[in-house]
Amino acid sequence: MPELLVDESIVALCTEAATLRATGQRNVLVNSAAADARGGEPARAFTIAHGGSVQWTVFNSPALVESLGRICGLATFPAGGGSYSYYEETGDFLSLHRDVEVCDLTVITCLKESGARPGDGLLLVYPQHATGPLSAARDAGREAATEVHIGCWESVALLGGVVPHEVTAMQPGQERIVSVMCYRILVNGVPFS
Image (cartoon, rainbow, N blue to C red):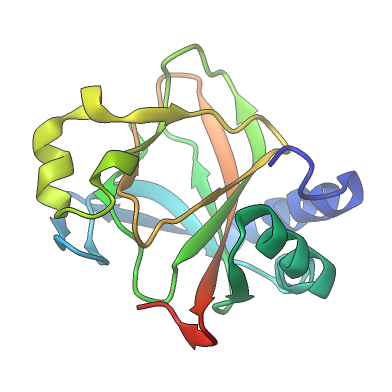
């Protein structure tokens, strides 16, 4: 969704992400304990900061929520505060997982991308494994994945609670900063589970 956000919103998100970087904490887990369904504790290495008022205002605006619902064909509402992820060290990654219960639809917006070459630090999704256990996607290997390129200042909506996904290791000189906001999906007026 390259035009989900207007430039002014993205500039404000970039400024907030840069400011909140100082509050970020290194988020490292060596051994994955990803659940076969949703959640769990996927292996990872990156820095994370809680989102601030700018992120909440942008992604909670009625116009954006309505637009997101129209684009995705789903009734949605924000699930709470978002976060900023800083993949800034060589090897930073997030292993194969499905998002936690309150994160049915994930909107990822790339705020900064530098030093990437084709094939470096990718978002991989496994849509053909949406209905099976996570272990089936893991067994299928990365050959079964679809690469999703999010250009700088572009957004992607991912049914992260359903579709297995991962971020492969950042390579030397590569850096990516993303805004992550979770939404619940309503099915017949009831949150999806």
